[in-house]
Length: 85
Image (cartoon, rainbow, N blue to C red; front, side, top):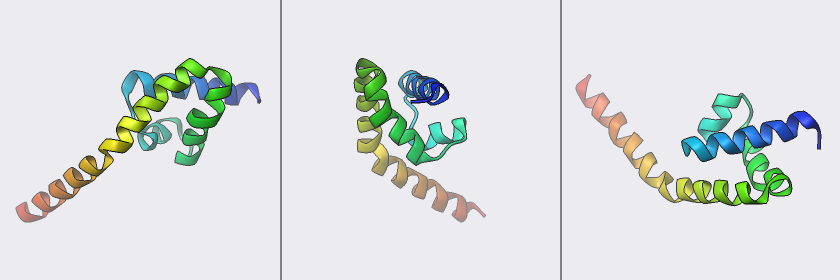
């Protein structure tokens, strides 16, 4: 694995762990695709630092379990804003 990829993987993992950010939010911050972030923290990180990978995995699972709530909330706000106009 190239050094710049290894550094990005560790940096992204720490960012997700510290901020509890979603894959989408993290991808936007780092300017890469969601697929790249997902591969970084699910496959590459496991080979680099297994303990950190497990902690990040728990955050990703939490975000996945909660995403339907966030989606519903976004839709609710969208229609509230449409009513106000």
